[in-house]
Length: 169
Ligand SMILES: [Zn+2]
Image 1 (tube, rainbow, N blue to C red):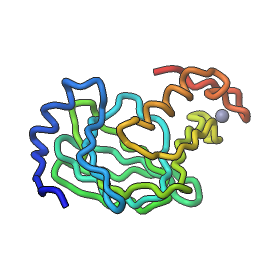
Image 2 (image 1 turned 90 degrees about the horizontal axis):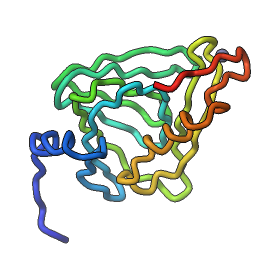
Image 3 (image 1 turned 180 degrees about the vertical axis):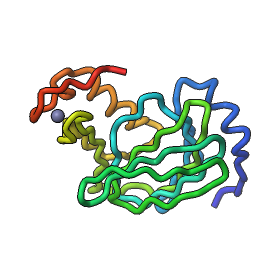
Image 4 (image 1 turned 135 degrees about the horizontal axis):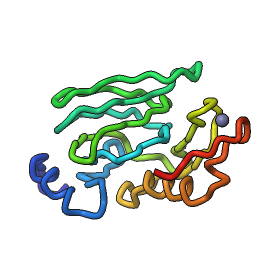
């Protein structure tokens, strides 16, 4: 066992704005992952993952959009200093500003597990595009890679049901 060391959340949130990456991974252990993320502008997809998530707002407020099993979109507001539990399998979209920070606790994915990043049509609600990934390492920033797949290809953003094309941000 290596030496145990505490991490300063204040220091982490000072360093993230100077980094090209929006996420700072604090640790990745088999049963526990911790990272701090700043908000992304134009967050639009819903993330469905096999791990429970606990989110604590270090700075700023978050609108956590999520979808019920019936497909209804709801919003939970998490204010600065508040914490929320999001069960595994609930599609969720954490929307908060780039100068706000969240601490996220999850567990490491098992080899057979997949994360899904799904976009829905803003006009008719149909599913537009889904990126399925094995998230082996959070430092690879899987969310940004899914965004590139969606926005770089117009057919991924074109609704098969109503023809509406989701614009680039
Ligand atoms: Zn549509």
